[in-house]
Amino acid sequence: MFRIAVLISGTGSNLGAIINAVETGYLRCKISAVISDHSGAGGLKLAEGKGLDTFVFSGKTTSDNIFEVVKEDTDLIVCAGFLSILKGKLLEEFHNRIINIHPALIPSFCGSGMYGMHVHQAAIDYGVKVSGCTVHFIEPGVDTGPVVLQRTVDVLYTDTAEDLQKRVLKEEHIAIVEAVKLISKNRIAVSGRKVLIK
Ligand code: GRF
Image (cartoon, rainbow, N blue to C red; front, side, top):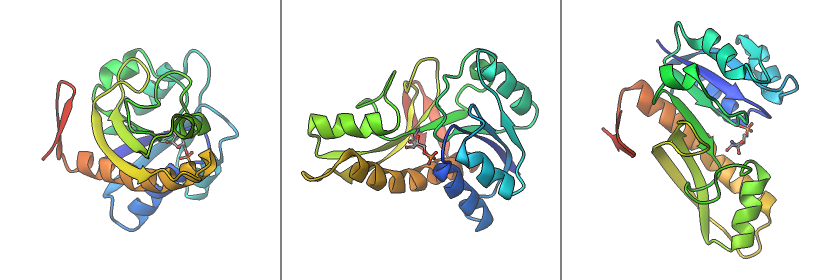
């Protein structure tokens, strides 16, 4: 069974989408761990309620602590609203095996400081007509790895950042599940910056 570890920092709605997809059989995966860098993350309660193993790590050793949890038997690490920057051995040993969901169309509105509502406010302030979400592989740096898939939404003239966030989040829940499904079925090939869906 394809084993995934899900990293969260907040509500965990993307985690919830993955859990639902596993429960319906759409994803043939086992969620082997839910790991957060914030003990108050709502997603931890969701995970515990489903009987999933949870861990909380924070500070300078977060990446190393995560590596100790995942190193033996994890096929894919899924950052689902995880705010800490991963580094070190974890990135080396899990090259092209860590994905992240970003609530914008990378390379727009991404990078340091661009998370959560900041992203959507920047899109509204810029006046873009479309936005969306991106699933990408994680590499050293922030939001820089190869793009696995993207989904778009219209941005309406009357939209607030909250309106846009709600619309994008619905697409995130689809995108994160699709990306896990493709990778679990070995339908992704990475060549440099480009990702082929086989
Ligand atoms: C999502 O908008 C995600 O794109 C961003 O953080 C948010 C997490 O939301 N990285 P949730 O915790 O999955 O509800």
